[in-house]
Amino acid sequence: MADLRKRNKNIIRNEQLKNDLNSSKDKQTTKNNLILRVLSRIVVITSLLIVVYFTSKNDKLITFAKQSELLAGKGQIIDCSYEYVKEIDKYEGCFPKDCKRFVTDTVISERESEELLQIAKKGLKYGGSSGGASILDLHNGALSKGKYFIDIYKKDDMKNLFSEKDFNVFRAVKEKIKYTISHHFGVYPDKIYLTKPTFFSEITSKNAVTIHDEYWHPHVDKETYKSFHYTTLLYLSDYNIDFKGGRFVFVDDKYNRTIEPRKGRLSMFTSGAENLHYVEKVTSGVRYAMTISFTCDINYAIEDPSVNKYVH
Image (cartoon, rainbow, N blue to C red; front, side, top):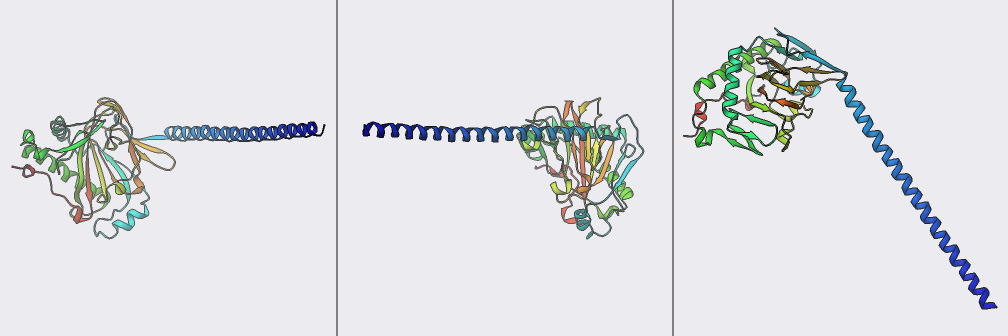
């Protein structure tokens, strides 16, 4: 009888332990499920907030320069970033009277724009990025080819690809742009120097393959390229005619401002954080442009490209 009571007590104790263990597991499972539900809701809410943020920013686009407009000149004065002022202040004659962005369609002629476009195409046909963005740099000879770059000045099949006439066109346009910067930003023309990189770009709708193809990320030129003080862009094709997408976007506090590329259109701006910007993805066609950059630091100055670049 005593043994029976003992066995019953053990059975009851085991059942209680089993129930306690199951109860503990149930509580842990409930707790885990609760955590998962909370995390999933956080992810959903965060995703919705991101979508709402970017959608609201896209709804607040102001077209600064339309492709259909012929602009003698249109500018916007903005506050200089602290870092830009601090850095450029040491260069006498190169400090801008205002930080700004400025667009004009009357500096570069139709003939010059077409000649530059043909120069770009002549070189770019020998290359082509695996992704959607290709560049041709006449200064150092860099040409996008697959995932990498080749040097056009060292390739036997590209010897004498560009003539002295081609380089003269580049130099003439560069000088026009330099004096336009001098006039609109109030700096001395002999105090700003051509710097690198200065290049042609060709953008298509192909998917990005390398980081070099991802041109659509917001960025500050001065942070990307230490030498930059004044950035200029010369468009060599037309938005909504030669390509779709691909607008240039200044990222401002309340509204983003867009520039629609127009062949021969020149855009200029100070290269500091006051001009955060990006390029929309090109969705069809081919977008051609030329970036011509200037520095106040003579140590970063580069020579104009010429036939002397070819290795004989």
